[in-house]
Image (cartoon, rainbow over all chains, first blue to last red; front, side, top):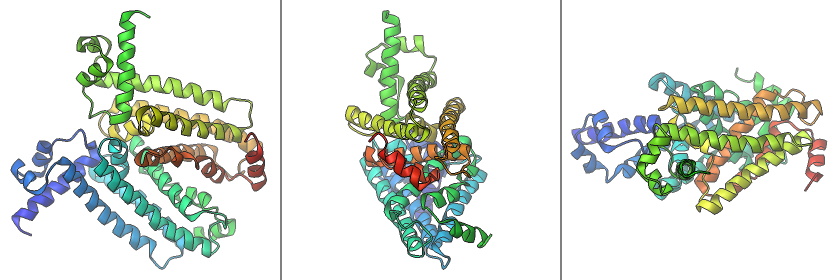
Length: 210
Length: 210
């Protein structure tokens, strides 16, 4: 990697960390450059504006998160187990974030959605695409769970997927507020209820892979 | 009301609106005073700092919201119906906010929790108290619902109350992101699942008071 792309990468890494910890409005370009250890001139060589940088951070974060979600949700485990893997990974991401940053950082997309939805249309619309893509990925697992009788027959797969994403975001909010990744522990239990999983299926999945 | 307290009130009203629309970090005291139509000197007569003002806005918002929650959750309807009333009122608050502000403003407490939890301990701890108080209020209704056989016997009232608050926050986030208060419509349906409400109770409550 050459010096040039190295500087771009340093800016992205510093901005991702600062955005997660402090949000968008509280950050200035000068602080991002100081944290990244690059001159301010480099910043405007790579990014037109703070907003353009934020979009690049969002896109990179989603590339990585999407890869993990797709991997977990397309494994050869049965669909309920795949969802459990996803929720456990989500909790683990917050535990890792807490170890690295000293505090739970929450969900970057949720943080920016609440901060910027009424201020920056370009960021808002990008976040909308990401949340809809998350709902799509979960919906596929719910459809499969229904086909196998692992979810209630009257469950609307799309709506449950949306409810699960909402539950993830709400619990990530509590985890950040309380600096406690354990707030995400019950996601799996909530999902069994929201998916109307029949009792015998609950028993089977709880015995599987513990 | 004298001129002095009138100025304080104008600052509080302007700050509440601006905080809901734009968050904390993006706001300056000068802008708050300009919006309120009061001189900057007045601001520091009433509030030590922007943080002190934000705490006053939070407290006033909670006094009003708490009054509504207590009223709805202590009515003489049965407990499930009271919860439904609460969710419908929550959706209506967002619809009203959208009409007044042009966009869904979301939950002030959730917005500030994600923006400030890792920055301002005094605000964070106040928000923690408020969310715990919300969970307390919902928990009481869940306990009653269990006693009447309206919720599943194995449901942990405290944990379900926490899940319901998380679901409210997650759906308020989607409502703000999509500028669509309708994202809160399924809160009631989600709650029936999270509360493990037996089918015959669901039928009864759906016929009640429509």
